[in-house]
Image (cartoon, rainbow, N blue to C red; front, side, top):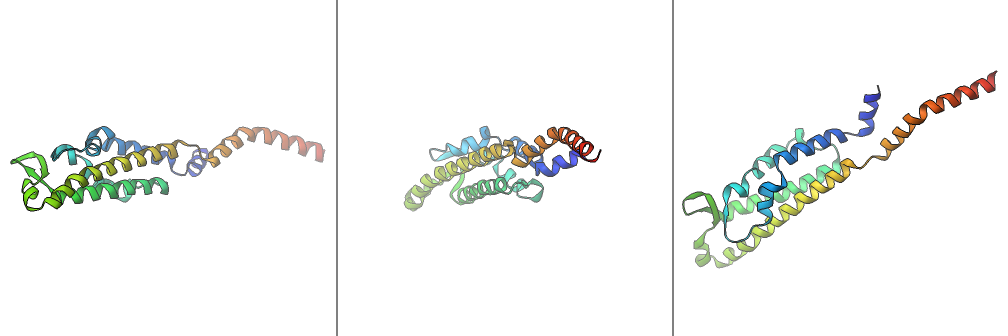
Length: 180
């Protein structure tokens, strides 16, 4: 009974904490997120750029990986939207370079044939990467703070559990004094 009451008052925090741990295992900040947030130049390592970002976004875009806390879920969705925007933009602006599947970048032909698009891509790719990194940080920080901050109802519940034996004794004394 006590465990059931704890789960009701907890509001799914423990499940959300476990889900956040799993998310951080699937997409740690020191992996492709670190690489994406610091993009410079015009040639990148393909595996570092997309290594597990695309897999995580596709895997975690399902009900099994939804956070019960709606604000945390909103922050996750904001990060996912920024990640999808980054992937969509880069998929139309970067290509395999020098016949090396591990290198990608903006097509050199664009420099001469489409200088405006070339310059725009050189600016937008790092900017979109920075936004992905910032929204990742925002989601993770917010989730950690929110899920580790005690809920007021949990505090009240704990106080009541601690005071319940005292209240029971007080009620027993009052009943005995009043009726006897």
